[in-house]
Length: 472
Figure 1 (cartoon, helix red, strand yellow):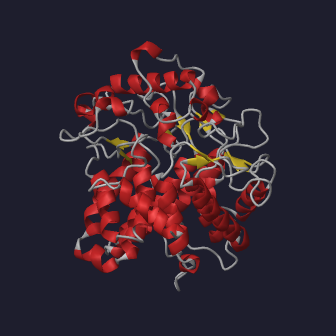
Figure 2: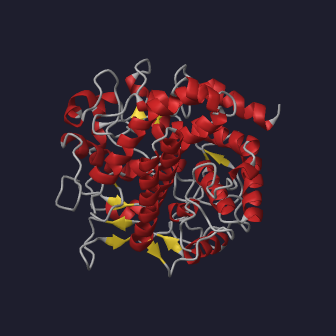
């Protein structure tokens, strides 16, 4: 069986009829950014199913605009996954924030890849998309989602979105969160039972101490009725508030994609304003989170003191600090430094590592197996492949693409892998690993080049110079 057929088989097996689970056993519900990445791959097999994937998720959107990180399947037993619907209590605790009453969800969010996914899904079959008014129906929900992040989550007041829980950033167990989490009193372990250890090896998963802190933060947010603090640190945000470079880079990329959607719908004034805002946000990202000495973007812990009251940069080097490479409006010096860092000893691209790890290979906290503390993930490497290609690093992008396809087949589309050996960890037959394999197999890299008017056709960023990088 070919790699394409095997990847397709995973997606068909994980399809529920309206959406795709990341893993039948370990993750039996619909996850937000998983569904976005899955739709990107699913568009090559069935553009209709890819549209339904995103529509199902967006139908669970809250009244305040947030897209929840989990949409629960009512047919799945409560004890199959924790935290379960009875922990989040979205229909009651989330009522003030406009949680839907006809579906149970979590109360936190995940990275906003959805507008990018919607644009790529539309381009897979524009005729079907227009016939079903796919973009016209998705647009107001996507616009509300971005408005929520840019306003309600502007905790630091500088314009960037903040995450209020490590689960929101998606890289749950990264050492980048250790300092901020150390201030959190863990929940009583007798008050809950971890279902993830029923299906995954303990050495691959977060420790009990970290998990207890995750539970405490989520419970505290629930008790505040999921209220957010915006426009400064005096708002309602809890004891964890972090500006993360990966989350914000994905939001900026999604802003560009949403501008493409608005142009397609004839909303040209809105499209132009949104693209201008995306370029301005790129400048804010560089100003707030770029660390020239490391050649990397860092997280800003807004709950730490900081000499200027803006919190402190976290000195941990995670793969999220490389993800802004997907933004072509980066200054040339920043993009060049990111490529150098990715290829250096800390991340090993094209060298000792088969895939780019989730955390600094040279750091004492690096662990090649434990969840986001070192293993390589398919979605972050897929993003870096696109970023490298966008910035003219085609040979490096081609090498990373080949490595991703090789490791996907060898590992059985594992959830994550040892970055040195490619040995699979976590779940097998993982949704986005299969979906992004399909995208790498079937998406022509030449199709990501510029249109005649100078814009990348896939929505990842604004116009670039003929050399591929901006000079400013």
